[in-house]
Length: 140
Image 1 (tube, rainbow, N blue to C red):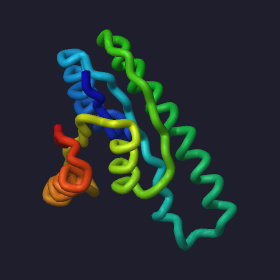
Image 2: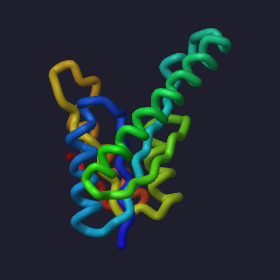
Image 3: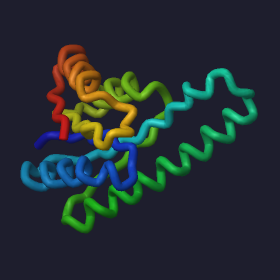
């Protein structure tokens, strides 16, 4: 039995990623953990009180999005757990995968013209995770 870590940003664009993780967990009998990372580094030049408020709100939103993912899994007969962490997205995904003993990390493919994520960059990140941790990565 393996352990799938599905990094999610939540929302409609993440549904196909979550569905793929849910289907794999169900098919393989693996544990499923959804991860949401609160990364506020884009606010580094902002006043500290504002930063705290934004971080708290992003954490609340992340926990809500994780609960929605768990509900989606339950509707498909899969029990899932959640982790909400603060930090740099890439490092936090890698660290969490190692900490929980993940056997597979699932990352969502960038979609839409307005996506801030580049597929080549995502593929490079997946390669880094596999090289640094030995954990398989699947981009869906």
